[in-house]
Image (tube, rainbow, N blue to C red; front, side, top):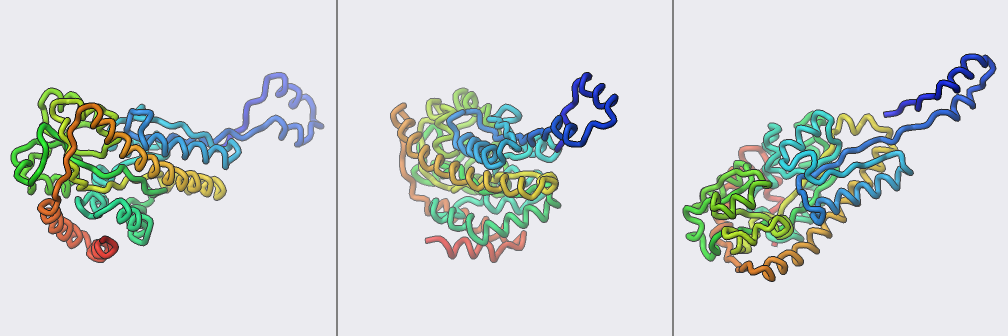
Amino acid sequence: MRKLVGYTALTLSILMLSACSDVEEVAEGTQEDPIKIIAAHNQTSAENPYQDGLLKFKEVAEEESDGRIEVEVHAGTIGTEEPVLIEKLVVGAADVVVVSPGFMTATGIDEFDFFALHYLFDSYEHWEQVIDGEVGNEISELVNEKSENDFQVLGYWSAGARHYYGKQPVESIDDLSGTSIRTQGADVVVDFWQQAGAIPTSLAWGEMYQALQQDVVDSSENAYPYFVQSNHHSTANGRYISETAHDYTTRLLLTNGNRFEEYDEDIQEVLQKAADASVEAERQSVKDQDAEYKQNAIDDGAEVNSVDTEELEEIARPIQDDFAEEFGMEELLEEVRNQGD
């Protein structure tokens, strides 16, 4: 990470001709280049909570390192799809990325889907208690071990509570029958929507506005800040928002553990401190924006209805059980449930 800044030709000539040049003169002509950190997420809006989180990461990392660290934040500019960000992290084209558990299964670590299970949490407070406790620590260690240190969790972010939005409101499970819905590609997510009667499909997030506008899909699901900032609520197939709260979402702030360990210990400490600050900033941004963008959607003419989720929760529970049994995570699942209401 360090290199000597090149001397001018005149300086080099003087040094070569002067055998009595002392070490201090040479040292005065050197300096340390800052450590360049590429931090990226897949959202393109400058108002997004992800952007708030990474800007806080940048602020703290640069201030606490006295300029030894320089952070470059990318909002969708090096990839709007999470698998692309993961690839860049692995090959070294990015140093810190924000990704969802559902997309991480493509790396061969199926246990990531634990946090993609629907109705795993019954409130944001429940999610936060679990993620900041022993379960979060265990998952973090599992990720590191299974990836052979390719992935190290620096912190857990939130993406809010995900809700259904589509061409018609959902008031009972029957309203989902035959409805095409854009979802994340995790097996447990696809399984849930199929059992609910919907037809899940995978589309790039950047294609979703046109897909809803042109009737390619009937519906989608996400948290208020993300789909309202993308104007999905203004399309014909996005104006009815049904508050299913089927997923209190977890996002992973990841680095490459092998490269991270190459930094001096004090640099590692600064980066972790910056990550901790980003967690706090991003979560607060999600909370603030959730209410703000719900109101924005209503003001723009979207219609919001509450949903009795009992039938949906009944579908989710055996999917949770089967997943936990398959991957030996029964104790973790039980611990999550015990911490709920």
